[in-house]
Amino acid sequence: MKLNQYQVAVLISKYLRNDISEEDHMVLEQWLDEKEENRLLLESFRNGTHEVQHDMDFIRSLDAETAWESFEERVQQRRWKRMMRYVGYAAAIVVVAGLAIWKFLPGSSDADDAQTANVFHNDVAPGSNKAQLTLSDGSTVDLETYINGLQEQDGTAITGSDGQLTYSTPGDAANELIYNTLVIPKAGTYQLTLSDGTKVWLNAMSELRFPVQFGGKERRVYLKGEAYFEVAHDAGRPFRVAVNDTEVEVLGTHFNINSYAQVTTTLVEGSVKIYKEEEEQLLTPGQEAKVGEHISVYKANMDKVIAWKNGDFYFKSDNMVEIMEQLSRWYDIEVNYRGNIPLNAGYNGSISRNVNLSEVLEMLTFASGALFSIDQKQVSVTFNK
Amino acid sequence: MLSVEKLFKEYYTRLCHFAWQLLNDKDAAEDVVQDAFMVYWNNRETIIDNDVAIKNFLYAAVRNACYNVVRREKVTQRFQLLHQIEELEESQVLANIIRSEVMVEIYGIMQSMPAGCQEVFRLGYLEGLSNTEIAEQLDISVNTVKTQKQRGLKLVKGKLNPELFTLLLLFLVGK
Figure: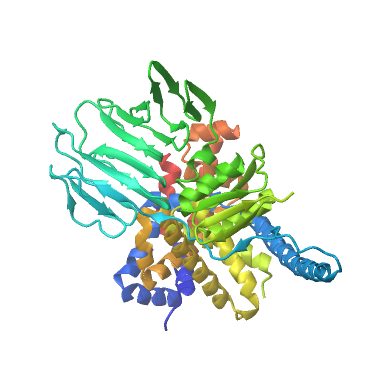
């Protein structure tokens, strides 16, 4: 008899409960004899006690009641949305009929070309893993198509797979530093593991210049754009990020630097020091430093800062221009504005970075009342009123 | 036929556990299961009203959703270590299903112990507290903790296979 997976699970449970009949036990033994893997599976419930505890902890942390409530809510919302769609159709018919009547009314002017809905002539796919690597000899490699078998002059192996690049660990510190540069274009992102084990996530339109192997005294890299760092701890060699005329010094910690506009350093854990000319400022986790003429420290909205690294857009009291700047970097689009753009209005919303542009724009219409159109890579934003 | 609510509550935990084995991320696992139930909800008229058929449908929906998450999340590298799951063989998927089904069962056994006993058992076994810490937390004497553990042992003894029993014993006495 061929058992299905649920029958096997019942037999194993009975067996573990010591509540298995002679007959069932024979069937279970037959199943165990079928494959080595089957026996290993049974073993996994008996050995590796820590593993089982891990599973139990997970199961205990679930709450089916609450999950059901939010499921029910989703179903309700969906019904409501569907209903609204019909209401929408009905409204559209009324509008069309109204326009037709308006048009044929004696003495009416030509309808003006005010936009009444989003117009998408095409859609724009989200960004993806894209980067160009410049090696120390000046040659450039397009990482979207090629990453196999790269090696630097000092023997450092550069390996990678889809979207991520790793530099091999050295035997000794380098005497003479040789540099590579990773350039992320619009609509790109990439992750990099440096030779000391430090991990760097780079956002679109960013650039990191770094030594293939670090020297003995410090680990210094040069950043443009935005990056999230998880710095490997090495008390003997501070890690320094130079960005514009600001320098960020750390020993081992997690933080984000955004320098698209003002250089903004946000500390997730550990501690960092920010230097600008004569000034210096120590950050504690949850704080961020903005460097203008001086260094100012604020409380950070961590979700917002880290969202890009986790694959989301996260808008919180952002105005339309700030939002569209983010979108233009990720979708590689050009943005035109029509009408009065309320710069002091802030909008909230969060959406995955992996959806097509139209989805993000629909959300923004909902949040702001603005209307959008997409034509090739041109996006226009219209505020009627 | 089970109502959707009963079905949801019956299968939610095991499906989450199954997704969690693939994604190793609790929030992502719960999201995936919510989505799978939504797929079920939209297709429930077309699915044969039979326990195995429904379970197969739900597990398959969760598995597919997990693969989609991994594909989508590749961009952000959150799940970079788990890329291999796209190459999971069918037999491995079945093994994972069996694991989830049995884990939920074991958990159920523990839940079936009397409350006082269970609390002591839970703190000691699941949260790894020492007898003294348990006594403090529950505001009972260390001796009561020990008695409850003994009671728990007796109760479990009749219910469990000697090997699993030894496993639990380790947790109960080892602390």
